[in-house]
Amino acid sequence: MDFLVFRLYAPLAAWGGIAVGQERASDACPGKSAIVGLLGAALGIRRHEEARLVALDAGYGYGVRIDAEGVVLRDYHTAQVPSRVDLKGRPHCTRRDELAPARATLHTILSFREYRCDALATVALWARSEAPCPLADLAAALRRPRFVLSLGRKSCAPGLPLEPQIIVADHFDTALDAARFAGEQWLGSDDDPLGLQRNDLCLAWDVDAPVSRAAQMVVRRRDEIRSRRRWQFGERSEAQCRLARESGA
Image (cartoon, rainbow, N blue to C red; front, side):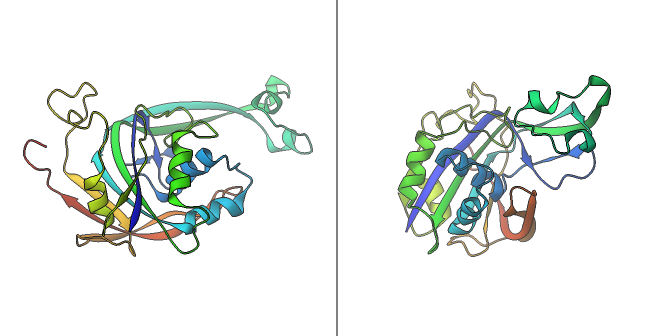
């Protein structure tokens, strides 16, 4: 069975969960919708092309290994926006257009946003029968993306090459173990220049994934894409387990 494997590292990443009020938390594990957004950017899919994004979500299975959870950074964030009344009936294609009304009509929105500093994850995808394109096409797009890639938010640019590769294996977790990346010998070691925090490995996967390990728990995550335009997400069942890191690894 073919698996597309690639890694995700950035000085800052944000794997958003359910946002309530002014709190914008970040999960330790990237959700499937974040990976679909990454693939969409690589393929050149625009935000309004909902059918293509939904097809990406449904067409591939998803598994991930969290190699380093990262350190949580909490940011106090402010943004100015005009009222809905001011925007009604007026096109605003850019931020400049949005802020065109008189300054007196602008409102300030306050929020607290979490980021993951120096987090590292390795992702595995496999094609389902309804996959819109082969895994090799996804790998080529990740190597030469149409749009700028980011890990959760625009400010979170990848800090290392994704190095997408096709691995043949019986299970997604063995495909993760078989993948090789540049510099992996020092990531998480005592001599690691990135200073990644060592922790037990965490695996998470779609419940129908081909996997060699038993799940320790099954959780529900609201990260199945329904409508990008309306920011609507459905629930997805995800299995998880933690693995003790081998001594010296």
